[in-house]
Length: 225
Image (cartoon, rainbow, N blue to C red; front, side, top):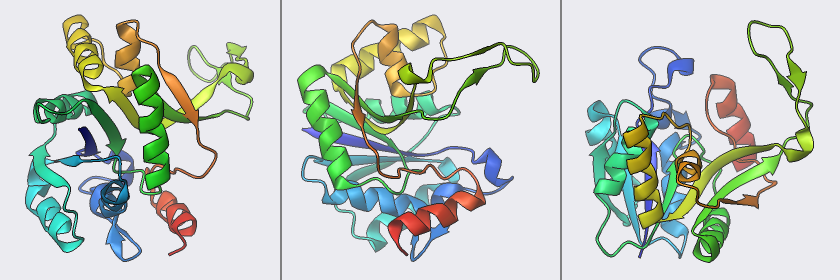
C-alpha cells in the first residue's frame, strides 16, 4: 500500500497575512485541488492523507467532496512547522502502508507520471526525490551581501516534491530529527540524517511552487488554464 501525504498547512507568509495559498483560486479550482487530482489519477497511489490548518478543515473536506477525490481517507490538522505536519501525517498512515509519498500542495503542476516515476525510484532504493540541475551561477554569502565564494553549480540540484520513501525509513528519520532537535526543510534532509541514500529523479518540466501572486500566473500558463 502506498499512501500520499499532501501538505497544505503552511502559513503562506510571503502571500501576506491572512492568505492561505492552498485555497487560492488557480483557474477553476483551488491550488490544492490540482495536486489532489493528480494523486487521485495516479495508479500507484492507494490512499491520501490531506494535512491542513485547523481553521481550514471544513473547507478542505468540502474541496475533497466537490472535486471527487475518493482516495482521501483523512483530513487532519498540521503542525507549526512542515516537519510537524509530516509527522502528523505519518502517525495517521494505515498499518498496511509500505511506502509514503510526501507532496506540497503548493506545487499544483505535479502530474501522475511524475508521482509514478518517484515511487518507482523509491521502490528500488528506499528514498527518492524530484529535482533538476541548477544552471545559474550560485554564490555563497556568509553574511550580509558580500560574496564569500562561488559554488560549483555542476554538483548542485534544486529539489522539489513529490518525495517518496519506505515508510519505515521516513519514520525513523523524523524520530532522529526530533531527538537531535534538528529543523529540516524537506523530508530527504531528515533521511540524510540517518545515513540513508537518497536518489534524485530528474524532472525537466515545470513544477512550480506557489509562493507569490506572480507564481499563480506562471502555474496557470503551465496548466494552460
